[in-house]
Image (tube, rainbow, N blue to C red; front, side, top):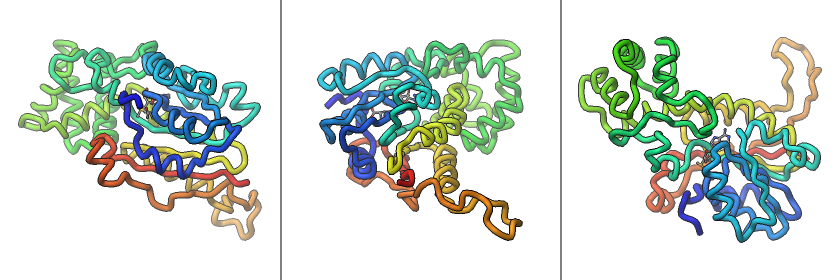
Length: 307
Ligand SMILES: C[S@@+](CC[C@H](N)C(=O)[O-])C[C@H]1O[C@@H](n2cnc3c(N)ncnc32)[C@H](O)[C@@H]1O
């Protein structure tokens, strides 16, 4: 098995998805292809529409999955665009998996600029074809937007102060490298930031640069629309805001009645679109976290479209 990215919560994902042939499954976050491989190895007749916005991930997965090539079709785009694919739309999906965030390969490559390791150019784009990298975001975002990003995505209590520090610094020099962002954070906190502090702030910038929550909010209903009856959607998230978007969407789709509470009688469809399969998010087991620390913050939720 390719070690590019160990599949997080692989057995749990398979147990819920239950791929069976001849089905078409969407892997909207292909990465190293480990979840795609699990699906294809569990079901000899299944095919996967394998989507990633990162061209390097697609290239790598294409060779990692060469032995299964006749059952994978690769598509480079944001997963919220995947439902526009003609086959997904016309034939429908028998299941979908999203494993959000970035891969170890992206994080470990200095050239991609996701890391807070020293001297790394601030880039953080999952899709290198887009214009907005992290340096440009820090140079152009308003103080208000920076505050919101550090507060909401980074849960940083001193979000406003950090935003102000960045705006002050960029008045004299562009923030170009990880060191520049860490220096602004150190002044804000009044101490050397811990690895945890840096991780939170860098993750916040990454979420903003890649419009990750927007893609998730658009993607969930769009994918649901092209799922066949009885098909299951599995989403693994690593950030509380992502998990909240997933939880709310699944809860809303599982409600029988969507009439405003003031209506005396139900006038809506009166029937849920489907059923949430995970009342609480599933978490990885201790053994998995020991083996793969990246799985630590994973939360898995699943929903099934009504038959
Ligand atoms: C956590 S990794 C997935 C790892 C993969 N499940 C595996 O086991 O190898 C996330 C991948 O999804 C991609 N990605 C994240 N958000 C995306 C989006 N909105 N649209 C398309 N790809 C996305 C990233 O570029 C990255 O390659």
